[in-house]
Image (cartoon, rainbow, N blue to C red; front, side, top):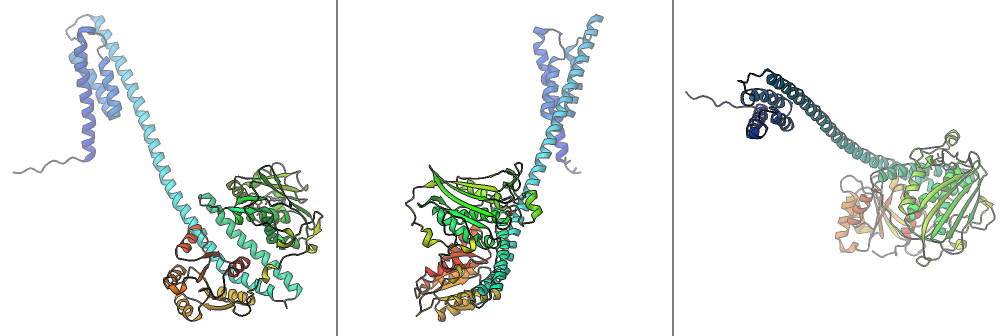
Length: 536
Ligand code: ADP
C-alpha cells in the first residue's frame, strides 16, 4: 500500500534546521575539545562547548542555544570528563566547571535573546515608520490634489465676479459713491484671490515644486508696479506714502512676478498694520553689489520676541490679531522664501509695539545695461510719482494711463477675440469687458462650437478655458493647430488650473499664453495689444 508522503510545514522545516545547527556546533565542539586533549589534558572541559553555545545563539536563536548548552553538558560528561577517576577533589572541580559553564552559557543566551528581541522591535518600528511614511505621502498627494481642485473651484466663480466689478468701474456713468464701493469690492476680491494663491504657493514650497522664471528687472519699475497693486488699500486707509527711487536703474536678476509679490506684500502689510493716515516710506538704494529696498511705516510695530517668528507659517502677532486686520500669516513666510530663492534676504526691525516697522529686502544686483530704462515721470503706473517730499496718495500726480482704460486703438479693424468657456457667466462678462475696450468679441461654450465658429469668424486670438466637458482646451488647441490656416492664431488659456505642469501642458498643446482665473485684465490687455490685428 502506498503511503502518502509526509509534508512538513515551512515553520517545522525551519525549526529542524535551527536545531541542526545546535547539534552540528556541539559535535564540532566535542571534536575540537578531543583534538586539544594532548595540550590541555582534562582541564577546562566545557571551554569549547561555550563556543558552541555562542555560535548557536548567534546563528539559530534562543531555543537551539539552550539545546546546545544541555548537549554540551552531556557530551562533556561522556567524552571529556573521565568517569573512572576516583579523586574526589577532581569531581568537585568538574562540578564547579559545570556550574560556571551553565551560568556563562545561560547569560550568553539571555544576552543574545534580549538583543534579538530589541532588534525585532527595531525592525517592527522601521516597518511601521515605512507604512506611516507611505500613508503620509498619499495624504500629502491627496491634499495637493485637493488644493489644486479647491483653488480651481474658487477661481471659477471669482472670474465673472472680478470681470463684473471691472466692467462697472470702467463705466464712466458709475457715480463716485459706487466707484468707492467697487474699490472695496475689488480689494475684497483681491484678498480672496491672494489667499488662494498663497495656499498654492505654500503647497509648492513644501513639495519643492516652486520654480522661478528669471530675467533682468529694474527694481524701480517693480516698486512702481507693486505700489499700483497696493494702491486701493493705501488710499482707502489714507496713508501718506513717500517713495524714494534712485535716478539710475537698479537691476536684479529675478522673477518679476515673485519679486512683485514680495514688495506688494510688504506694502499691503504696512498699509494694514499702520493706523489710518499713517506714514509709509519706500526707499530703494544700491550699495556695492546689493539692491536694498526698505518699506518703513509708523504703525503698530512688532515686539522683539515676535520679530523672528513672523516669518514662520501661520504666525500673527498679538497686536495684529487683536486689531483683526485679516490675514492667515502666509505672506511673509512666502516672501522670505522667494527672497532666499533669489539669493537675497528679507529682514525686519522694529523698536517694539506702536513704534513702527521696517522691512529690508536685499538682493544681489546686476550691471545696469540689460533693460530698457524706466522713467519714473512717464512710466509710473502707480500714481506715486516720486518727489522726496511726503504727499497724501490721493494728491500724487497720476502720470500713467488708468489700468482699466487700455484700448484697442485700431479704428478700422478691431481685433477679433473668440472666448471659449463652458462657464457662461465668466465668458459673457469677459466679452463685455473686452468689448468695452473696443475689441470685437464672440463667445461660445464648447470646443466643438469653437472649431465651427473659428472657421467663419477668423479670430485673431482665442481665449480658451481648459477644463471643459467633451473637448477640453488642450484638445481644442491641438485640433486648431493642425490646420495650417491657424498657424499665426494666438491662443491664450484662461483657466483655473495654474500649476507649473498645467502651464507646460498648455505650451505642449500649442497655446501661446497661460493665464489663471480670475484673469488680470491688465495682463490680458498687454498680451492682446502685442498681437498684430489680422495676423491670423
Ligand atoms: P498676514 O496675512 O497675517 O498679514 P504676513 O505673513 O504677511 O501675514 O504677516 C505675518 C504677521 O507679521 C502679521 O500678522 C503681523 O502680525 C506681522 N506684520 C507684518 N507686517 C507688519 C507691519 N508692517 N507692522 C506690524 N506687524 C506686521
